[in-house]
Image (tube, rainbow, N blue to C red; front, top):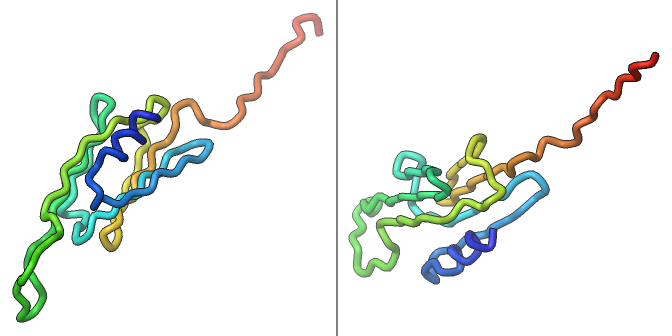
Length: 120
């Protein structure tokens, strides 16, 4: 996971994120203002998380741009943590906040093994 933390720290200062960890998963929260599920592509392949997003540029009503500082595009590749699985990864985007849940591999709780007494 240090590679993911380092990659997130190397992002532009205007990219806001949180990285959380539980016993069974990682949660990556990224601010992607103006982005909807329809304008977001997310893929996990070859140990990399690829996020490609764009926001709509149409101002509301009769407004026009005087100055524009928010990027139209967000394109980033991040390393998948070594112990994370992409098999059951889940993502949601709500009001410009992307939440990506990455379950950890091999976390399925305790396994009980029955021992059979061959003599009895």
